[in-house]
Length: 82
Image (cartoon, rainbow, N blue to C red; front, side, top):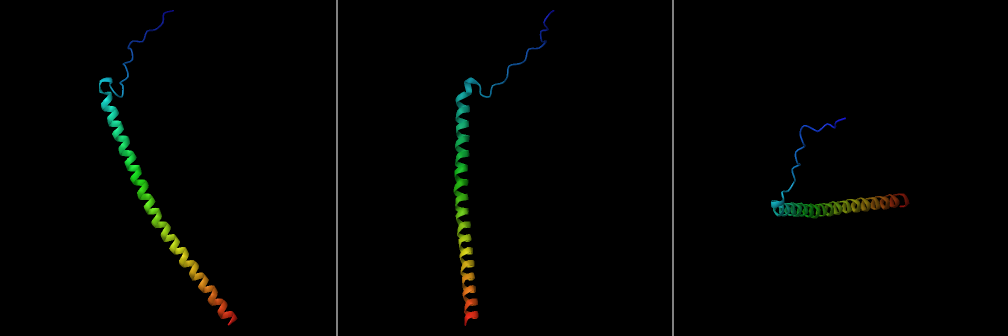
């Protein structure tokens, strides 16, 4: 039996970076990576600042609630015992 020979040979796959332009692609990729890491660093700092604000608000709310609760309990005890 004869083996079938494909009528058309597959074309060569296109390479992401041509060999003569490899340095430009590497530099562009490095700049993209640097840009992304800078954005992530800024996002991290911004998020940390916002979470610190939120933490301060929560501490203030819990502190006020606790103080109010203690004052109410003491007031009730004075009313019942006095």
